[in-house]
Length: 449
Image (cartoon, rainbow, N blue to C red):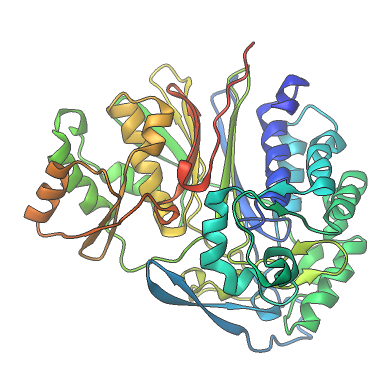
């Protein structure tokens, strides 16, 4: 909001917010992570998707990664195996990605966009209760090693209302403000990054960092009623899923629609936690910028004296594909998107956290706003269901007639006892207003003009 009031574009405000999340939402993201950005240019109607996700290290060829550290994270009552440590660290993209979004579409000076994050890093930020619940699940990774002093001071995990503070992070951001993103790739932080990861058993080298580039990725599209959804082709095929929905959605009663949507959303067994966060911004000119970032669970590999935890993407099982090799960009479920109406104007700018549930959360929110006529807060907060194999996982409050229709169609119903961050974390701006997902203590704000 501060950046928009100062005359910044949607891109400026989104970058500033992303950098702020690297201070306040380090349970989900950070400067050592990666992400994607989708930008809608209102003047031309063009949509651009940028890939600044992580790349596989090892192009230097002088280092073999050692073993990772296996940990159990309990989620939904079941243990799930992740791996952390230096060998899990991939080449980070957040600094480069923020810099490229600003270079292409920003108006304000770069240092102005970093300034709010620096202020937050100097004081620390209050941890929301929803984030504390995520921390409890992810503590085996986040409160491991040096992270224990941050997330579990005096041996007790941070609770909602406690201060989250990263010593040294303000200095890291001050360097980023003065020297730009190159500081992490060819500057002084690059050698520190390499030395730190290699000391932890990783293969990251100086060539990996120097060769890293933000990529422009193709934009997919699908029709939803009178609207066109535009986004990248993600690992979970969100746009393809929307395209596969019945064309008569507006004519179907909710129970019948639930059965059709469940069939389209069937997810073959992927249920990872997905520490991810999203920012969606629309400016007064109608431009939109949506940026989704993550660092996985975090590798528990911290840059000395800088308060930056590095990503654990190579330890995320669902992201490991057969084509991975040094220098290859990894795949992701993240899908920041925009929706364009029949007149060519922006209808929705949205993205979500939640790993394999990103698609579920986005589809349900779009249906709520564009088909059911809900405002954005109502569409974002209403109960969702997610499909894994033949089981429908349902939040409390989902209409009983929909659950009965799903059961009659042969689905096994698993009713969760509470609204849960498992079901994603949408932030969206559009025809129904602005909203942040209550599952992750999200916030939606509108600026009066």
